[in-house]
Image 1: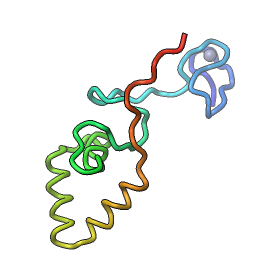
Image 2: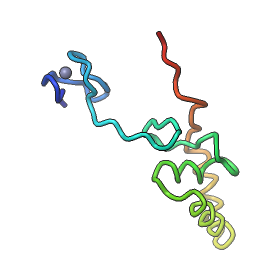
Image 3: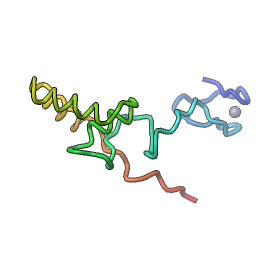
Image 4: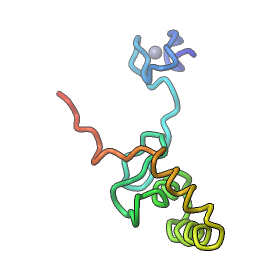
Length: 104
Ligand SMILES: [Zn+2]
């Protein structure tokens, strides 16, 4: 990929142009007050059991209560939900406690 500001070749893993410092990729819009790293995480706030529901709700912009109701229904009615929930619990990393502090 190339820098949109100066045309310098930018490494795909780099978030900023090394020549002019412009953002190398479109920055995703922030979601609420939560640190958004673009990755599905389990937030430490708003969690009921393991934060899986809150994580999905935040990541995909779903209604948290709706996600919880649907998850509960899946667990109660099919049993598959419980397995999926535990799997998500294990797979999805926990969100950081707070936004990374600026190192000066
Ligand atoms: Zn540049």
